[in-house]
Amino acid sequence: MPSESLVVSVAQLSATPGDVEANALSAAAVVRGAADAGAKLLMFPQLSLVGYDLGLFADPSCWVTENDPRLDVVRKAVQEAGVTAVVGAAYRWPDGTPWIASLVLRPDAEMLVHGKRNLHGQERDLFRPAGKGQLLDVDGWRVALALCLDAGIPAHAEDAARDGAEVYAASALYTQEEARRMDIHFAARAMDHRMFSVVANHAGTGPGWRSCGGSGAWHPDGRRLTEAGTEPGLFTTALSRGELQALRDKDALAGYPRGAVTGR
Picture: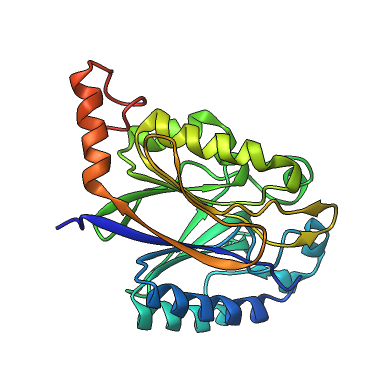
């Protein structure tokens, strides 16, 4: 049976540039912290296993592959904690196709690979856009994943809503100049489609950028539920199925169309 609430943690952190092994060790510790907070879903920022520095990817060690042993420490932590963790990686498929990816590590030892659909700037020179992803089932909740610019493209969330998503969960890098943009993106996705939205943003700085922080969650009515500052940390909130359903039922009584507007 689907749970009445879904407890979600977002990890706002600064990666060790180019060191997948060190970042995987750090991620494993965060998984244990999320489990202690009661979370069933844990989101990391975009490219959290290597850092957002596109100049790094000439080094083959910055890429992750299907059975990469450096991920074993995170896999073990996930299985012991019973938490589904979504970590960010530069992922190379067996046929060589390069993705900016969210790697979904599940307690049953399965790994799913979700790719970024909307690339920008230099990303287009290094990676290939992914197709439409699949919804995750986390404790009976339907979760759609997004990667950074995906959340800024309304059609991306609309597709997720049509598929029945109840949570729109993103891994991102929003810079200091983009704090308002981030808030608008996730408030709009939540309110327009009557689903919760959450985002894990980087902390700190990288080449040419400083993060605005602000990781957290938004209610389906568009208001903020949690908001991080700019410092690293783990931020946890419980999403209520009852509140979600009440809003969807209210929309239905008001005669709003089913589908993209209500997320049903």
